Image (cartoon, rainbow, N blue to C red; front, side):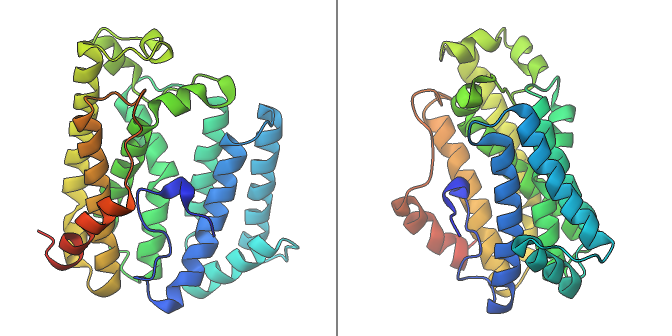
Length: 274
């Protein structure tokens, strides 16, 4: 299962218990393929929505206990049944991916967070259900981590999102851009001036605070799941630091984690996480 798209954090890694690797891989395959329908290739908007609607139909079949002839959804149906996963979380993911096809900007942070609630938070919630640890408090902390990871990914990919499919997608809240005297032309022209740097620092500070607010979940979870969470938190914070280090110039540098970075942050995260 390819993981290039999610290089910021491990996916179905060796840290996960053997019994959960297959369910995580199936969930990832569903989410990754659906996300690619929304973002990748040369499909028209109508074709993208048709593919995502076909996935919604397959979820309906699972929900109604009807057979499906898709190997992916046969596996997904078994995972959902065995682990009693809420199918609503898969619907939330599809809803967010459809939104990516039809919406290219966000008026404010609250609107963006509603998108994150559906595009990112379901993954953490599904993992907690797999671990039978989906308490209200754990879900709340998980949402903080997952939404933060989504924001961090948006900030490192500002230039990529603008250029992808030639639709000019901007996840930066429009009112934040206006507050710092910025607009879409600064993205189109890759303008890394003082105002841009200040605006990006505002965004990274917000993402960092959100990640740290969710980090106690990594203390609460024991064993391999706790170790996995500590790596995820450490990786997300390292990306934020890299964005700050280049003063928000994600036009010329796409901050990402190398193998050397993982070697540096891995041991402290695994064995001495504070």
